[in-house]
Length: 96
Image: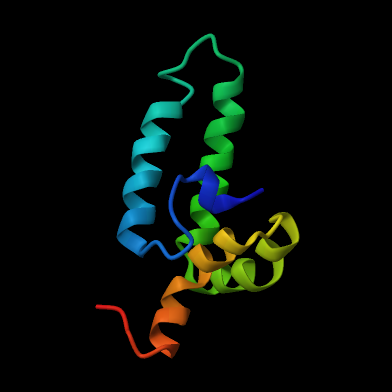
């Protein structure tokens, strides 16, 4: 599972962006709000699992380094999007 896609954030999303998207999606897919929809429970669990990993800096580093490359079918644009902060910093453009 691609936790970034589940939480609808970019690969270089900061903690606040991850948190706000988590809250928005958790409220949207909460089983109490989606009564009668069987998929809402599994979607809600995916959102919680993704947040647990991406909100913890240590777990996120492990996920980014070890798991994410295994589940992504990299193409050039995805690679650049995922590593744009590093690329900009190394090229001297930096990030504000």
